[in-house]
Image (tube, rainbow over all chains, first blue to last red; front, side):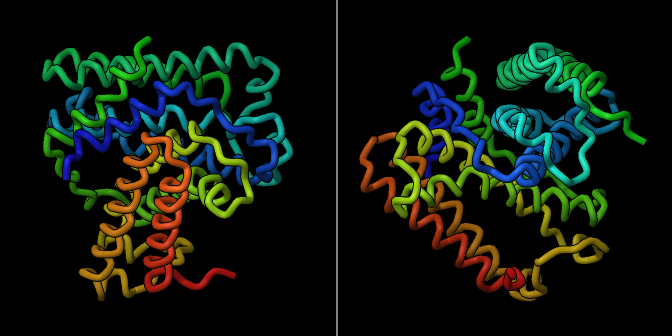
Length: 155
Length: 155
């Protein structure tokens, strides 16, 4: 099985100029559940990398490459879950109203995160440990940059 | 920004022979939450494709390509969340004991799903609508093949 070939489908799909499908018919509660799922998995794959950058977890180049690749996909997934309709959800969410009242700023924070993840993907292929740890730190800052303004303070 | 180039990081990471990192230090409840998150997102991206294959949603080749690419990543994410330690989780889960008592069969069901997703990724690049719908149906069967034996019946 040629995994290299198969995973190239991601590059192809993006090259095709995919437009996010309209989520307006999805229930608000489902939108919240789906965006929270994407955040949960971002945490799963970013956590070990943050640990490496902080020297708490042994550095492993293969894990950096794989988790960066997963984050590349995951960094594209939460955003349509913040559709205005999701404001009506009757489930618990830490999303703050600023997401919608300051939409341009939220979009900017989203793009900063995606750009930082893409930078990490690039250096994750180079094998330069210091550059990878710097890129991991940069991703972490963009997580915080969004949570700072758009997520309720966590306990 | 060259999206084709950047997403190729996924192919690279798999080529590097990544081994799943040990999840033994992650709390059982987190394991459950993470695997459920992966399933939630598989539903998000497979749902519209199933709708297309059944003629309930208009066919869109770009959506097939993008969602197949996302599913390629997501199909690799749930499995370490079924580590034996996750049996001790005190949260709600539909996972059945057969996952651990029939581990080889569960593994086979997992591989059937991943293989079907990879077949879908391949045909999603070809633009043959009939072949894509057939591949979508094949993926759906492998979802059911696992849920049938390893997930509590849903209401």
